[in-house]
Image (cartoon, rainbow, N blue to C red):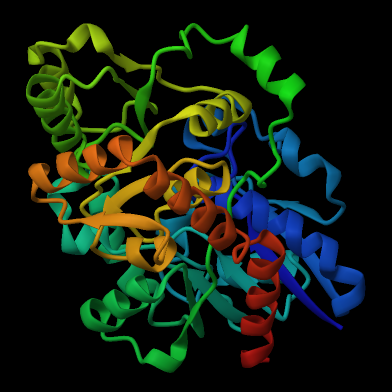
Length: 386
């Protein structure tokens, strides 16, 4: 039996992004412990603000796991203290975690333990390829990643596209990188008729009005201004009856996006709904005439998979990892060409047979991805270095 300790620091009360991946991976690995004969441990560090307040509690999600370990310092402090693997503080924490066989760093870094094999997640290289799409925190990742590569034994990433970027931009040997894809938070029959009816009564939107849908963080990399341009064109040229619904929290550099909304002649038909519960997001996926996701760059593109899972026909970009996720179950467009996006949307809302075909293909493709598969691929990766 071997022991793995996973860094669960990215898990927040409402997990999204990296935290969503980590929470689901931990849950899926926990379910495999007995049959795969390994032990799962969890390490967690409090956020800086909570640490300053003396709040060092684990997120509620983690309480159900028995082997929980707290590092009583925020990541900013530990990054400074763990800058070298020849360090008495590092040795102390490795001993504190009972010398695991594998320590798994889940957010672009991993502790420099001397006696453990070190595994690190790198999800994408936005901070290197497209720094203009990142905030000041993400822009510091490159130094952290390059430092950790000095002692990392294995890198996990989420698509073949990201793997190639890691090879090209960080000069990592291909055999040192293993792809473990993500999975949806939903399943095909997630919404029952009764559940759908109940949720409709909780949401302030008239679902009798057709709509185009986007779901993700509101930030420039997602290319939302192109969606608005395409929407304006389709309203003016083809008089489509649709609204545009944008679901997602504000990220960074989002002012130009909201300026574009305000300037739209149809701004009263553009809805930004900010954060919604998983159930309510699922409802919007399931009722959308088209899901639009013309992102410039993605490590995986999870919203595309979720839209396909819940029966929304998809238009997405032909770049980065998105064709890997979508396969032949979506219309692919050049994200730098808003007219291609508009034409693809028009094609779907004008051709019910094509729309239904993509819905069926999407549901079938979505079944290829599961958190159990992700966990098994991750375990296989662990075993490859033991």
